[in-house]
Length: 240
Ligand code: UDP
Image 1 (tube, rainbow, N blue to C red):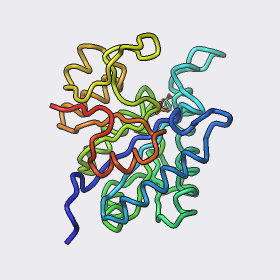
Image 2: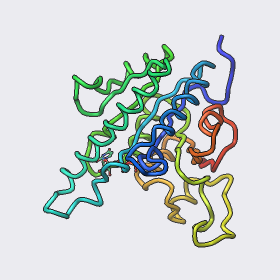
Image 3: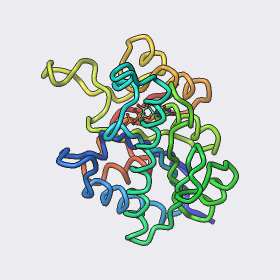
Image 4: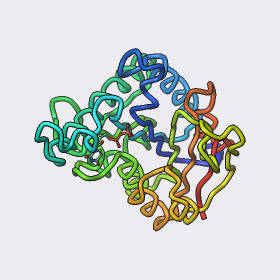
């Protein structure tokens, strides 16, 4: 029988911004390698890991919509395609160190990746493979945070681990207020009513309705990804 850790199956959300690292390129291979190594260390323990990747390091639909006559849906499809690039990069990095990894896309690109099939995704996880969900929800007007919440609910993962470039959620903007405090825990209602920019409302309410806890943590601190996946306290825990 498998040893018992806090989480059995997790969903790691990696934003495009987190993948960009120091931003000399769209993707920092040091970051993808760190993700691969830390994920490898926990899958070896039997913890199942699914990943949703963002695309904001390459293209964000909302900031392009309107300019040059681009309608929102077209801009968002380009954004979703950007997440596929990140997913393939991450998959190649994972497989370079021997982690079996499958990419599933929310719309078909069958020469490149599997289509999203829930039961197949779960089967991959049960076999110890990492599954990377790409192309968000497949629908314009949504975000990859919402895709993370949705896939978590669908595959019965126990938590969304949101990897960012900040330590967690603060009571004020730490860049302008040096006395801003990192919050240990928050309720969904705090996030919604205080308009804390943790996740968009669609994503956070989906987590709330399905009692999915969210951990917001800093991907740039070595060891943090594996700690978050093992259920050690890092960053801010949103629940209740
Ligand atoms: N997107 C979308 N539907 C989805 C997920 C993403 O249309 O379900 C598009 C949207 O244009 C978004 C872009 O893909 O700006 C990249 O995703 P996101 O901004 O969520 O990435 P992140 O902020 O995590 O890097």
